[in-house]
Structures are given as structure tokens and as C-alpha cells.
Image (cartoon, rainbow, N blue to C red; front, side, top):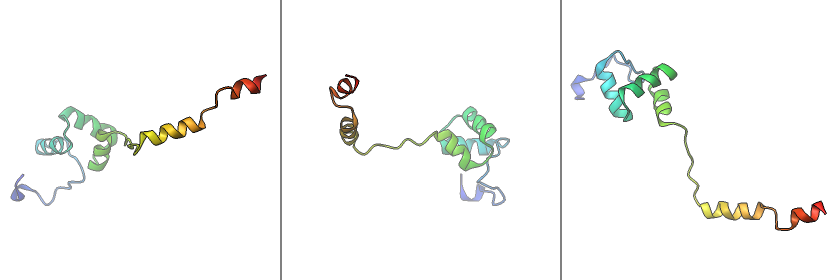
Length: 88
């Protein structure tokens, strides 16, 4: 969209799905289909930030070192024979 095409009266924090140019802009921005955009606006409202969060889905944190988690799990796991001596 060229600079001179941008309407200064438009609130770009809100998505107006009745405007074809906004549907084109937001589907390109969020890399989604028109149907996904419309469903998101229907579910979370017209806030661009809320729609972005809805389309992105939950944040999955990356584990920096899976080996470190495995070492912790091994350390916390019951030792072989530990349970059998408690039940005897």
C-alpha cells in the first residue's frame, strides 16, 4: 500500500472485516486466509493484537537443553529396588 493510499482517519489497531482493502491487508499481514481472519474477529473481537494472538496460538517455549531435562528426570526418578524395599 502506497503512503498516499493510507487514510489517516483509519484506526489500524482495529480490523474492519466489512472493508475489502482491510481484509487484503490483514490476511497478508497475518499470513492467514480470509476465513481464518473472519473467524478470529468473530471469536476475539476486532482488536488487531487479539486477532494476531489468536491466529498465532499458544506460545510454546523452547527448551534450551533437552539433555539437562533428561538428567533432572533421571535424578528424580525412583531408584531400582527403592519401591520394592518399602513394600516388603
